[in-house]
Image 1 (cartoon, chains in turn brown, orange):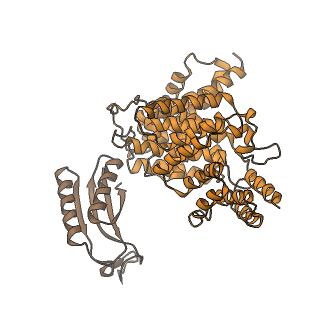
Image 2 (cartoon, each protein chain N blue to C red):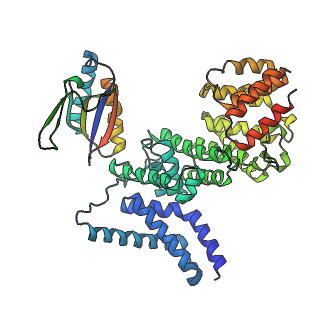
Length: 107
Length: 413
């Protein structure tokens, strides 16, 4: 079972060196225990571009699809047996990156 | 076999077997929705058949078998209709749980799934009342004063989340068990309190069906987790509170405070059962097991229900227990209740000084203003007392309590 762990943040600024180091330790553990699928940090929402090609002509909009104080700062995709296992890992991930996270199952 | 006997047998089976049927089907089919529907159909079939055919010798086994057939029928229909039908994928752990004094019972898995921390509190309450207690959707909706459709949606969404997010069907590990049990007890306490101090205009001040359900569920969990002190504590607390119910609302529909209740009207049987549980936990505490908050609250209620007359109340014992509770839970509400015992021992002035320090934290809590009003009244500070009663009346949501506070205010001259 795969879960998306979204990292939610409400302030500008990237992870500090201490946070980066803690994230590395957590990622190594995910790999060692077979939970790792993929993970990454994202550039700030102001670097986003929205494309809408539903009408046949791609509309390009500068900025994120939703302006909000809280934004997606990064994510993990993990493999876990069930929600209890995923929530435990998410709790550790939140501690490591020092940010709030959201857990959501893949279909 | 006549219809009345069959009807009684169905009611009894519903109380005793509903959770077992839902739990064993959930385990077998890995799907709460299928289990719930099949259990409901099995009981509906019993309603049709038992009056004519007679009550089967083992009603529980009959209901489980019938529900199993109904579930298989539904799964076959779904497979026929939808080739892409995926096998239900709720996970459960087939190993027996770690030895924590628990009996391995599917009902325990069911309870922990319904009270999972990833579900909102109101969802846990609704799901537990439906899946474990077997209340119908209209009954649950009525109990919490929400529209039936809204309650139905809440339960449907919860079942979908449990399935999609893979909330497991198992007894938590020993390491997680205390926190998860306390989550389950919080659900039961909420159901009980909603019954005991029902809110909302025009509702009965006490909704016995909710207090009774909460007690029934607590008894079940006590059977499943006999060594858990907090389970015993919460059950005792509920029993000792429920025991006072007959004396708690006057014939005129007014709340009667503990100090003025007719103690002869209290339910002696429930008190004896509650005291037995408290004694059991006192013995454990003497052996070095630190009591949790429900056990301490139960002990406080045991002191009150031991006094044949309000004047016989051992207030120093009550205060000692509150001191213990404050160390565990230094919340403003506990401090407020402790102040009531302080008033009896050291006088209203000392108590008022404690209560006044809670002004900011409890400004929106009716009991804070009611307690203050009572202390001010005892100190002869009438004008302030009336103002505090006014505020308490504004904030109280229970009809009997409003009636009581209004009378009290009007008595202050």
